[in-house]
Amino acid sequence: MLRGRVLGEADRVYTLLTRERGKVDAVAKGARRARSAIGGRLEPLAEVAVSLHRGRTFDVIREVRTIRSHWGGLVRPEAFATAALFAETIDLFCEPDLAQPEIYALLAGAVAAVAASPTPSTLVPRFQLRLLHALGLAPADDACVRCGGAFGENGAWLDLDAGGLGCENCYGVRGDAHALSTEDIANFRALAAERGSGAALLGSMRVTRAADDLITWHLGRRPKSRALMHEFS
Ligand SMILES: [Zn+2]
Picture 1 (tube, rainbow, N blue to C red):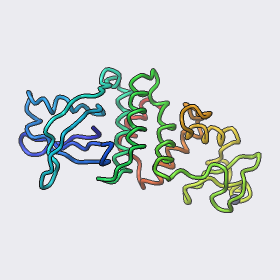
Picture 2: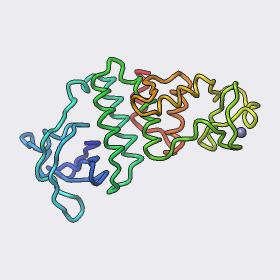
Picture 3: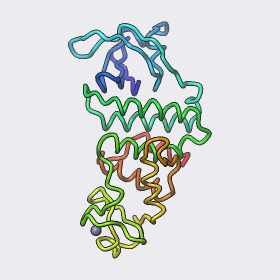
Picture 4: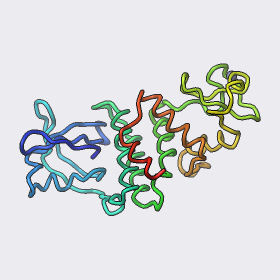
């Protein structure tokens, strides 16, 4: 479950990320009542099995069964803020009723990792770059966004007008505000890699900022939950 909001006196609308249909808004009748079993099981970011009935405006949630709840790990403020950022980012990028099973798998894995991590906010850059890859939005990490040339020994520059990385010939004169060293570029690549294949878990300071800037560039704004994260990172 990505997000819940109040609907009328007794109901709630939940935004669910499903494996089969992607993002779905569904109403739980009576979920605001204290004894509602459905409302009780729809914790933020719990993985649940739901049976849905097609309604006029929203699908109606008939039944909820918990598959995995990470609530014990997510009640810590830093973990909750990180998981909330993941949920909001996916909510902002994903269209309703478009199945994206790799994004479902990414979120399920990321939430489990956050719940288990002693330092959850350090998982943000890898999540951001993996998400951009899954969406087909990740910039090339081996060729200049402007000329297509390789990066030299002085690294690359993040171009936030073009949403990509540029080479020294094209960007070297711009100074180092958005510079990435050769090590940073290797880190950028490893953070986005699938688990096992030389993947990195932690971003360098500059790559952490670059990943966040790329997400903001694609969305045209920063996710609201990002503000919460500043307390921790
Ligand atoms: Zn270039």
